[in-house]
Image (cartoon, rainbow, N blue to C red; front, side, top):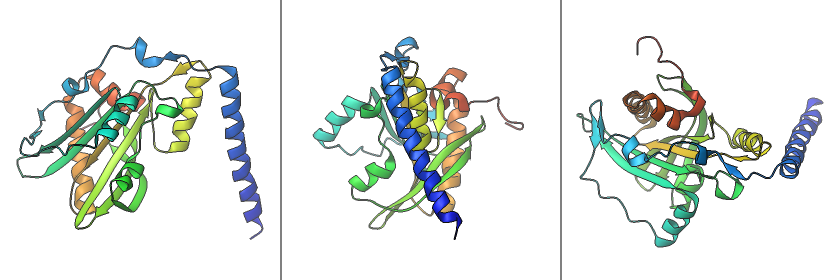
Length: 237
């Protein structure tokens, strides 16, 4: 019981320190140079193959038309978006969504599924942080389960900011601060996969899909998706 006040003080001190660091960072160097401007342009539609390792885009799925207001907001935040449903020979389906933004300053940060799904009427019934074995390194991911009526949708996602994939919003803020201290504005990308059904089946399926997709990309493509999470293929790959 005696440790609780100390823990509260430490947490409060940590929050205050981060806030102070943010203020110092804003004073020391206002970010003005976008990292993405110094890199080769990437066409996400061309980067992600329509078929690979037994998976192909399911042309029978008709995309839902988003609200025009939402579309306008997305165009302000994201330079490119991709939304596809893939199916394999067994009839299993995985939904893939990628959103890429060239400017990851505070006002333009990518939107997390934790926020977007409830905004569309879903209830988030479970959420956790984890590690996904990508075959090219362990990737910190967020996993959640969204429910809307009879629809039960487990979701795996990660967010890349600059060259780093960070599993929590706190770490992403630190990455933004690191770039800001040098006057740089990082780019960012949301990589989200989901499927319908029980999570004990959905999450392994999503892992296998991700591993196959990453293996189909060249090193530059994997670096775009994973940042510094990319390593040499693990043994047996």
